[in-house]
Image (cartoon, rainbow, N blue to C red; front, side):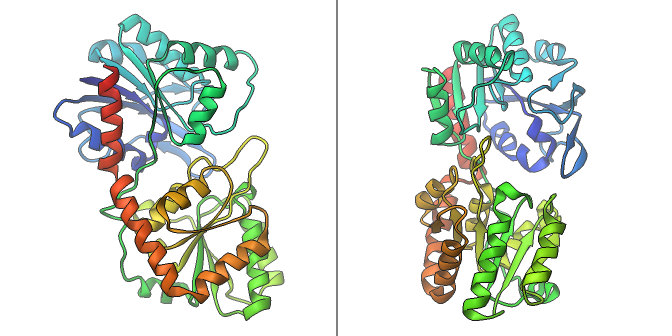
Length: 376
């Protein structure tokens, strides 16, 4: 089975892991195509570099409008596909984007099957030409992959009546494992228990609610804990200034950007992982991969009820859910886990077992393989 996969997200090496696992299948011949360069609002310009094991089956290709999920397209896509002659083209792209329409048009020329992957979990009404492109893709595709049941429901609401396979994000369960991180804790100067957030420091991620919850917890129990924010973003400095003005020193700390290969150490330093996302008019949490990563490290969760978060917490049994935007409820849930460490450890252990079973890269890649094999 000759599979050509196209994915702008694969300019980030961790997103290539599912294709590395897929390429190991004896029945699969893979061609992975990603933008040669991609402009990210947080990382700047990123250049495609294949993971070890993908060097011979992947390529970075020049694109137009690098950095635009909606508008980007490839300059020289057809020659690469014509040379490879795929049985199936797998677009890890949304159905309303230019690049997905480009892939569909080339599929028709090559006579191969067509599958796309969606993460959009909000029903949106796009203006032309995006609405037309989405309609054509939904009408012509042979199958759809969706990151969650919420994303699948959006496809149905858009009129798609074909087959859908739920394909969750995978995690590296070989690297993301429980480990001793006391040395890192001492270096950070963090006081246990450590309540952590990892991701973009942006308003929609609920980081201001986390600050308010920290204020509530300080009022209730004093500065006996640390809130650690792992990552960077546009709200970091405003949030830091507000924390400095309203909280005792050391309660609210920032690490800045952390390399992905160091995330296991930083997640293991946490006693609780918090994802306090807030739903916005044009966005709600699509999956919450950091929740699965934290559980892989044996860290219990507290998440808001935005998007896929409550379903993920419920499915894994790895933590508690609070009402988004309710800092008092968030403080209650965090306080409960701090006061009941044995129950928190039990949640984390239960969640880790589910992650090992259902969210490892080999398992997710097998789900993808089985769906694509059925289509071909």
